[in-house]
Amino acid sequence: MNGPLPTMQEAAQEAEFQLMAAKDVLEWQHALIKALHLDHLHDDGKGIGALFEVAKYFSDTGFGGVYSAIDQFKELGESAPQNAEMSNRGAHGIGTSVSLAEFAERRQIAAADQLGITQQALNTALKLKRQIQVLEMPDGSVTAIETKVFPAPNRRARQ
Image 1: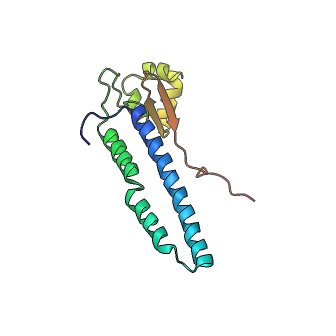
Image 2: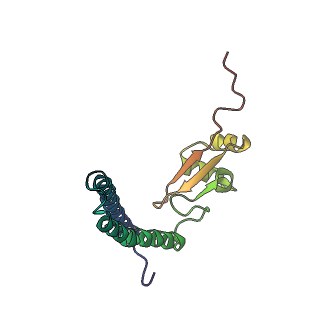
Image 3: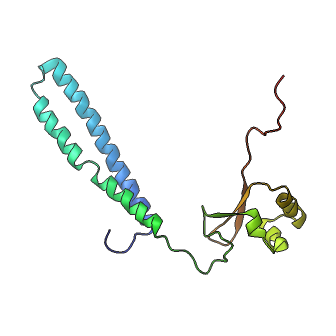
């Protein structure tokens, strides 16, 4: 890809356009398959050559834009800049997270305040080694997400 990377909004708009175009091509291919079937049933396949040429055209031109949009998203994802001004606790926006232990290291009171919990609750979660990931949002707020095994390993068996 030559030139500057598109913004996420531009890339999303292009992806939507390409997906709608791909949907149209799939609908056309479905109609073509039905036409091939009807030609075979009612006209002994006399029009199959022309219909095959249309199918070949769809095959040659139908998804080039989709592949280009996929490449564009891949490049955009690989080269997304990080915000150097954001406080660095290891998380850089939605989708990037750090463990609760790493987030709270040497700053439990401040970490608890950011999460909206007490320092005691934070300390308990750390002692129990709960599987909690902390995500830092672009606006500087944080969200904590806990991963648990389901069903719980010590769960009683049904009688």
